[in-house]
Amino acid sequence: MTDTIQLTADEIQQYRKELTGNAKALEDMDLIERCNGDLEYAAVRLVRRSKIDIIKADEDNFWQQAIIQARQLVCRDHIRNDLAPDILGGLVGLFISSSNPILGVLSTPLAIYVVKTRLENFCD
Image 1 (cartoon, one colour):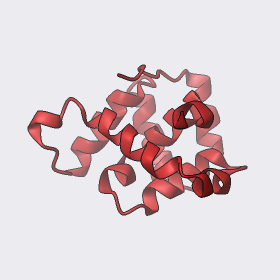
Image 2 (cartoon, one colour; image 1 turned 60 degrees about the horizontal axis):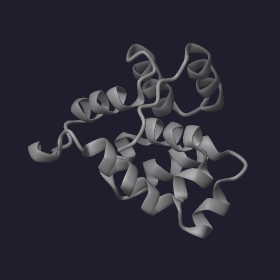
Image 3 (cartoon, rainbow, N blue to C red; image 1 turned 180 degrees about the horizontal axis):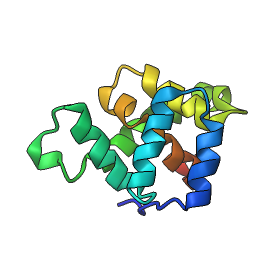
Image 4 (tube, rainbow, N blue to C red; image 1 turned 90 degrees about the horizontal axis):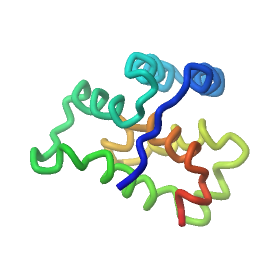
Protein backbone atom coordinates (compact mmCIF):
# COMPACT_ATOMS: atom_id res chain seq x y z
CA MET A 1 0.00 0.00 0.00
CA THR A 2 1.35 3.41 -0.88
CA ASP A 3 0.84 6.62 0.96
CA THR A 4 -1.54 9.01 -0.74
CA ILE A 5 0.30 12.07 -1.94
CA GLN A 6 -1.50 15.39 -1.74
CA LEU A 7 0.20 18.32 -3.46
CA THR A 8 -0.08 21.84 -2.11
CA ALA A 9 -1.03 24.74 -4.38
CA ASP A 10 2.60 25.90 -4.29
CA GLU A 11 3.85 22.46 -5.34
CA ILE A 12 1.36 22.38 -8.20
CA GLN A 13 2.63 25.74 -9.43
CA GLN A 14 6.27 24.60 -9.10
CA TYR A 15 5.65 21.39 -11.05
CA ARG A 16 3.73 23.35 -13.66
CA LYS A 17 6.82 25.57 -14.16
CA GLU A 18 9.09 22.52 -14.43
CA LEU A 19 6.82 20.96 -17.07
CA THR A 20 6.46 24.06 -19.24
CA GLY A 21 6.55 23.01 -22.86
CA ASN A 22 4.86 19.64 -22.32
CA ALA A 23 1.21 20.19 -23.24
CA LYS A 24 0.00 16.80 -21.94
CA ALA A 25 1.76 17.28 -18.60
CA LEU A 26 0.30 20.78 -18.22
CA GLU A 27 -3.19 19.46 -19.00
CA ASP A 28 -2.61 16.73 -16.39
CA MET A 29 -1.52 19.40 -13.90
CA ASP A 30 -4.83 21.21 -14.47
CA LEU A 31 -6.66 18.00 -13.56
CA ILE A 32 -4.41 17.41 -10.53
CA GLU A 33 -5.24 20.93 -9.38
CA ARG A 34 -8.99 20.27 -9.82
CA CYS A 35 -8.50 17.12 -7.71
CA ASN A 36 -7.08 19.29 -4.90
CA GLY A 37 -3.60 17.90 -5.49
CA ASP A 38 -4.58 14.28 -4.79
CA LEU A 39 -2.42 12.25 -7.19
CA GLU A 40 -4.32 8.98 -6.80
CA TYR A 41 -7.70 10.62 -7.39
CA ALA A 42 -6.29 12.45 -10.41
CA ALA A 43 -4.97 9.11 -11.72
CA VAL A 44 -8.47 7.59 -11.45
CA ARG A 45 -9.90 10.49 -13.41
CA LEU A 46 -7.16 10.31 -16.06
CA VAL A 47 -7.72 6.59 -16.63
CA ARG A 48 -11.49 6.96 -16.84
CA ARG A 49 -11.12 9.87 -19.27
CA SER A 50 -8.68 7.88 -21.42
CA LYS A 51 -11.13 5.02 -22.00
CA ILE A 52 -8.40 2.45 -21.24
CA ASP A 53 -10.02 -0.82 -20.24
CA ILE A 54 -9.26 -1.76 -16.68
CA ILE A 55 -10.40 -5.13 -15.45
CA LYS A 56 -13.18 -4.40 -12.96
CA ALA A 57 -11.59 -6.56 -10.26
CA ASP A 58 -8.43 -4.48 -10.52
CA GLU A 59 -10.06 -1.06 -10.76
CA ASP A 60 -9.34 -0.29 -7.11
CA ASN A 61 -5.75 -1.51 -7.47
CA PHE A 62 -4.69 0.06 -10.74
CA TRP A 63 -2.75 2.91 -9.08
CA GLN A 64 -0.70 0.35 -7.13
CA GLN A 65 -0.18 -1.68 -10.29
CA ALA A 66 0.89 1.42 -12.21
CA ILE A 67 3.44 2.24 -9.50
CA ILE A 68 4.84 -1.31 -9.71
CA GLN A 69 5.06 -1.08 -13.50
CA ALA A 70 6.71 2.34 -13.24
CA ARG A 71 9.23 0.95 -10.75
CA GLN A 72 10.10 -1.89 -13.16
CA LEU A 73 10.76 0.64 -15.91
CA VAL A 74 12.50 3.40 -13.95
CA CYS A 75 14.70 1.48 -11.56
CA ARG A 76 17.02 -0.07 -14.10
CA ASP A 77 20.47 1.42 -13.53
CA HIS A 78 20.88 2.85 -17.02
CA ILE A 79 17.44 4.51 -16.88
CA ARG A 80 18.09 6.03 -13.45
CA ASN A 81 21.35 7.57 -14.66
CA ASP A 82 19.76 8.99 -17.82
CA LEU A 83 17.06 10.89 -15.89
CA ALA A 84 19.33 13.45 -14.23
CA PRO A 85 19.27 16.47 -14.10
CA ASP A 86 15.65 16.92 -15.32
CA ILE A 87 14.16 14.07 -13.33
CA LEU A 88 10.52 15.21 -13.50
CA GLY A 89 10.51 15.97 -17.22
CA GLY A 90 12.62 12.89 -17.91
CA LEU A 91 10.17 10.64 -16.07
CA VAL A 92 7.15 12.13 -17.85
CA GLY A 93 8.88 11.59 -21.19
CA LEU A 94 9.93 8.06 -20.28
CA PHE A 95 6.40 7.08 -19.26
CA ILE A 96 4.82 8.69 -22.34
CA SER A 97 7.25 6.95 -24.69
CA SER A 98 6.92 3.55 -23.01
CA SER A 99 4.85 0.91 -24.75
CA ASN A 100 2.64 0.70 -21.65
CA PRO A 101 -0.62 2.64 -22.18
CA ILE A 102 -1.31 2.98 -18.43
CA LEU A 103 2.12 4.55 -17.82
CA GLY A 104 1.51 6.91 -20.75
CA VAL A 105 -1.88 8.04 -19.44
CA LEU A 106 -0.59 8.40 -15.87
CA SER A 107 2.79 9.87 -16.83
CA THR A 108 2.45 13.12 -14.88
CA PRO A 109 1.01 11.85 -11.57
CA LEU A 110 3.43 8.89 -11.62
CA ALA A 111 6.42 11.15 -12.30
CA ILE A 112 5.40 13.45 -9.46
CA TYR A 113 4.91 10.45 -7.19
CA VAL A 114 8.46 9.27 -7.95
CA VAL A 115 9.90 12.76 -7.38
CA LYS A 116 7.98 13.25 -4.12
CA THR A 117 9.03 9.84 -2.74
CA ARG A 118 12.59 10.42 -4.05
CA LEU A 119 14.00 8.23 -6.79
CA GLU A 120 16.31 6.37 -4.39
CA ASN A 121 13.40 5.47 -2.07
CA PHE A 122 11.13 4.62 -4.98
CA CYS A 123 13.64 2.10 -6.33
CA ASP A 124 14.42 0.44 -2.97
